Length: 165
Image (cartoon, rainbow, N blue to C red; front, side, top):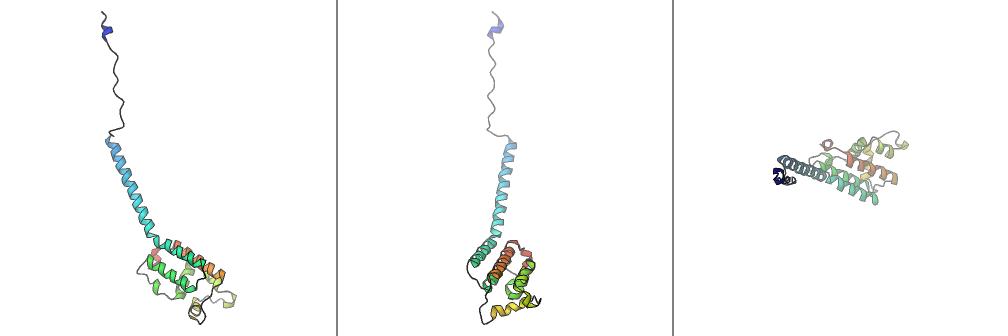
C-alpha cells in the first residue's frame, strides 16, 4: 500500500466575509456619518439664516406684480434690515437716506433714473420728501418702479449684515 493513496485533498478555508468589519472601517464609517451630519447641520443653519431674504424677495415680487407706492418699497427695505440685524439704525432713517444707501449699493442707478436733466444735476434725495408726504400720493413710472425694485432685489440678495449696523 502506497502512503500517498491515503492522502486526501486539501480543504480551503472559507472565503473571508464582509462582516464583521475591521476596526478601520468602523472608524471611517463613523467619521463619514459625523461629517455628513455636520454638513447637513451647517446647511440647515445657512438656509435658516437666509430665510428673511427669501421672504423679502417674495414680497418684492408681490410688490412688482401690483402698483406699489414708494412707501411700500421703503417699508420692505426697513423690514428686511430689521430682520437681518435687529439693532440696526436703518429702521429710523428717513426715506431719502434709505434711498441714498440703496443708490450707493447699486452705483448711481436710482439717481440716474429719478434725477433727469430737469434737476440741473442736483441729485439730492431729499426731494423725495415731497414725493412721499406731498398732497398727491407718490406715483412712479413703470421704468422708475422697475429700477427701484430691481435695486431693492439686488440689495436684498447681496447685502452684508455688517453693513446694517
